[in-house]
Image (cartoon, rainbow, N blue to C red; front, top):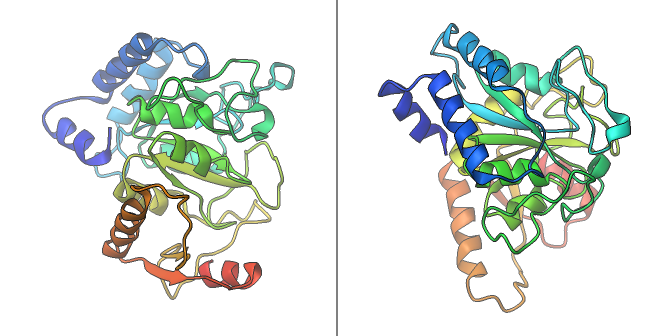
Length: 290
């Protein structure tokens, strides 16, 4: 599922409520009890979709379904961070969720994760291990396991995860997705259960770099209530620079070099500056790419 396909279907007469019905059918058919920690009743999701139908269709993410990692607040839905005893019900959306909903996006449910977002394999949850949608016999990756599996299984266009030390990039790699970790402060973490507040980032999973670019435009917003939030450099488009290593060790894998080259070419085609960072000290590289 991606933005281009979904918009074509909406132009052909599909409604957000129709789409929500389809997604609930997919979830039932997929039959993975470890995927969601909280999946609202059908009536709740239909009411959200009905409200979106009354919003302007010109909104950037009108009718776009997304899944939220269960350490990110959605108003009225429980947040557990993968720990039943931690359970609380927030009265407000996390800032990133608020921005997405204001843009017309539809939250579908709260996804499983390694407890308190601590882990990289997706197995450290009392709610079970979400199925890897690409290779069911393998781990889903963590800590944003359910968020990645939901996108890979076609239950949403994109999902929110978090990334403190790989939790958004590892599940993406395990399930053949794009996993975007923004530079620190570009996306507000207000309303996110902290793993390490000074390092936490909200990450995004999607099937397409093009989709990530559109979602980034919605969620990259200064939040005065988040002490780590920062204003994007006004002299250039925020986040339009990536670092790569000139010298690689792909452990002898025959496919990875061409896949890596293709990914770099795709970013360049989208207008990104690709910067080689071999030998650059970590802090200097961070400043270069921020």
